[in-house]
Image 1 (spheres, helix red, strand yellow):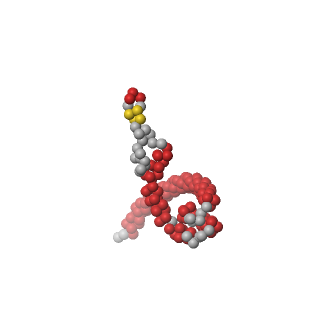
Image 2: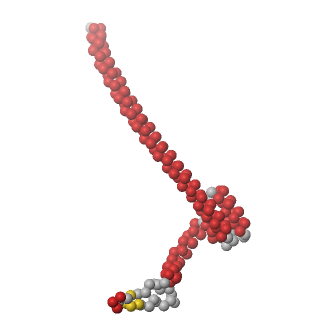
Image 3: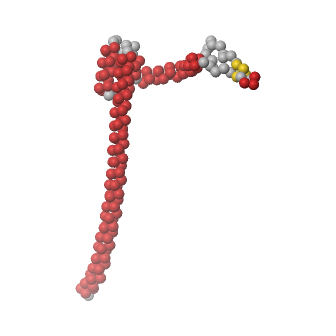
Length: 176
């Protein structure tokens, strides 16, 4: 789809007299891509503005580069990074320096989060192994306990059976 207002590329004669369509120049392709993705970008901006409206509202009070930087740093200390990052990037007083610094902090945080996630995964695996080991030990103990109860109940039953004929005899011996 050619850029609005631009003439379509002229057909060129190829080998053996065939006509082929000339490829759009790189600048035309970029404009065409930008035109197609404009609506998506606009919807994405709207969604991010809505999602982070509280941070954007807080940052709206800032009027200078230093105020924006101060709000960004305070948000980082509180751990409120996603909204503050978007508010910082889109604030009119934001400079390239603030954007670079904020991006650098987020980038380094991603490394820290990645390292923490790897440590959490290792710990989770250790805990799962320990849990499986404890469950196996518990199952073994429960099985041994059940067997002991069954053995005890059988022994009690045998003793009762062994005493029963003696009682019958005693009752019979005392009888009339």
